[in-house]
Image (cartoon, rainbow, N blue to C red):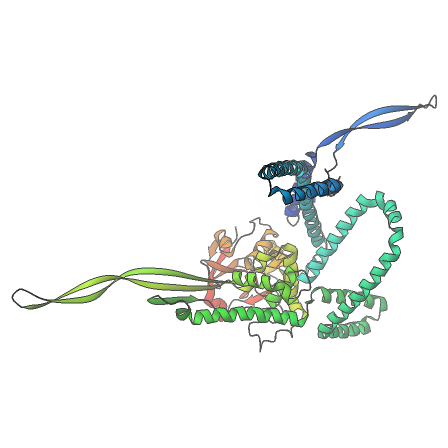
Length: 583
């Protein structure tokens, strides 16, 4: 078959009922069923097989014919059909060209030629449509197998997380572990499918070894140059890493252990560092800031730029962004190094999503007082006063800043969101790239606040399960729309994940959705494990932020990063909404 069949993973009853694995197992098994259904729709053909059978008494060999139904091979592509018929196609093209050269002199020839070309076009359309129809079941299998591969990898990842929860202690280790599982899965799959062809491949490639070696040497030299440039751009990070390794080496006193640690640290540093050149990253930031400057000018001079109205009313958000969010988003989108010229179109697309400038016109009927003086027949002068209606035009100008940190979820898939979260967790290992004195909106490196939950509170098994799950993700960065360890979290995504893995099954809810399933609780009766809701933290109605109250005036929530925080600060007190108890 052209489409390689994904392995069907087998799950135990315990795995199917385990709250931490249930959803991923269910998705994998559902994807497997769909893949099997698609595979069953592949057209079949009957082949004749010849089997040899030896009679043990006489020692003679007998032949038997056996008929077996197998999948038909995928039809050859139209491209290969055209290639096989290339001489005929070229001859036909030359004939049509000659006819075009002479048809202007003869109306009859021109008419007949156009009729012939139309007929040929019709035949091609019919053939292409027929070919596309024949390929439909094979395309369906390919799509189903691709979805199954993603579901299988996710199930294996969730299982690995359960067996080794400390591996998900931060976005970096989580991302690395998922990539490792994906590589192992793909390697195992292709090893099983290609083992029979290994000998043929080896023989076929023998003559190419010398050529490949030359190419490899050249590529190695190029990679070496790139690596040197990368280290030069991140020399501070590498210097810190090397110093730490030297200290650890002295403490551990083990050369082999130090070697493994060194490789792991360098790998982590490389995978979470911005790979692009400083001039490209700074150039992208400058280009985006220039777009913001043009927008600010238009807003400041709106009456001059858009004249003609009687009154202007404004509702304007601030124009600003975090340059680390911008660079992290671009780097994750392009999955590695990029150049400034390459991302100009993407910058415009981001800008149009972040800033929405709208103009609405209201027309009011207003009245002005006018007088009319006139003289009657007797020569007496009179003055009449009356109200005259007229249209009064009001221009309402609204600028919405959607917040750049809310955009990655619209541009990135789950894997790329994981890369984005890793870059934001480390600031690309370039805290010096956007110093706050020059870039006041740049994020700073933030460490999470830890807290020792009172032991008596942990005697409640349900609350203890919530805290155990929630503390796995301390230090994860805030990612708007994020709802799992693979993407990091926003506030409601974090709470939804924690309670879904602590005995509830409520799905992915917003802060207001979580409030809707809770029973209101007064401040006097609040207990550890109750949810705490806030309002007005951004422009939305109802609850806009949520955390888990842990007692002692503290909560654990997804700020930036996920952390413990006091609810008694002036900020949280000014936005406090209510407490809620889960059912």
